[in-house]
Length: 540
Image 1 (cartoon, rainbow, N blue to C red):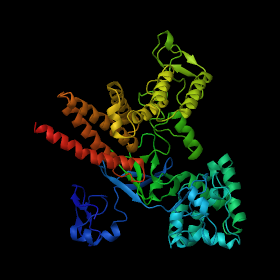
Image 2: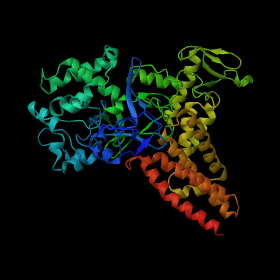
Image 3: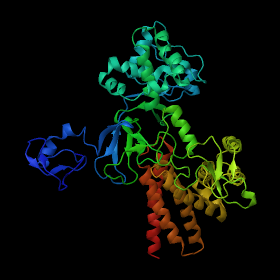
């Protein structure tokens, strides 16, 4: 069972099983009363589906959302949920119809396809005797059209794939009504989407294409297809278990609201189950949130992405503060910095990122053209960087530090990459870098960890990777101190161990298919080695 029974000294209520008055309730969800453990165990088969430490609430602003029904400890899993439906991204090169993995040259050469419908299948899936059953629904509707699906080009986005995830959703109505009812209740933002470029594309490429291609006119009306397309866009989670990633839609997970400083992080199991968990403590009554965008983007970029993909403008505390909690994550240096002004430029009017910008020290005002010229050039140069080229990364930081604030998101993006590039590859490579490079790696990790704890305290994958790089740097620092018989080695090794343990805590739910899951496994092994070193040192 998920929870014990606790007495929180609140008014008594009826035991769910025998109706006797009791002050004891399930400690996990704190919603249901029991007279004792026997009746709690007796009711578990029913209660386990609702035993969660949150409640569904609603208002006009957020619609339905989730709030913590009790204090939540750091590390707690709040929700683990299987997808209602999975499918390829709307714009994707051809993928295996079953596992959604991109097709490689071997698959293409052997022309692996479903014998009945012609949809492509990878070699591994084609060997599975259950393949027809596993993609039965779209196979059946493809066979019914009278012609097999024929794929000629494996290397470019294919228009038929544009409708496949929507089609799978629509087929739930006939083959899985319970999932269909849950899915069709999700937000679609049909009114807001209507007339937009995405809506027009969905109308032509999905709503009109499905009846025409599958020869099923009248099976679904255009409005229902467009609504499902909206549900997929608004509620779809990108699942990075394959290359390219696929899309999955969940039920309760879709009720978790957005914040640019969320208190939950999400992970996926190898089977695409979604896990929401709390990296830090959450107080009872707090709204539960994740970020629908990328917390490591600047405010203007996050706002644009949310408006384009989720059809709303964010007004969370971070977006309402141009300084982003005093980090100046989106700021430029004053245009008079060469004349001694150490001020920073931000929008003159709060939230108007496309208007004039003003220095917070000398009040100098610059036009939007000045801002765009710097940011556009930086974005272009960033795109051209070789991510494992330490020299290029360092030169980018030196060049753009003339115009961008020290914590600017472009600077931090490159610094984050640089923490991994310094001494990357074989662990022995760390032993080959100079003391200067090693200290630079450590300093960058510490700077970014301090910054991201303010901006992205729930961004467990990024924080976990940073803690791992810091752990590796400190371990090498300790090794060099031991070689030099410097007593400071113990402190370096102890700090390395602390960071390795934090890596495991933050990445514990990442699957082995992802690099973060592999980092977690390596950190676990390194922890044992560090403990052996410390134990041996204590005997000296």
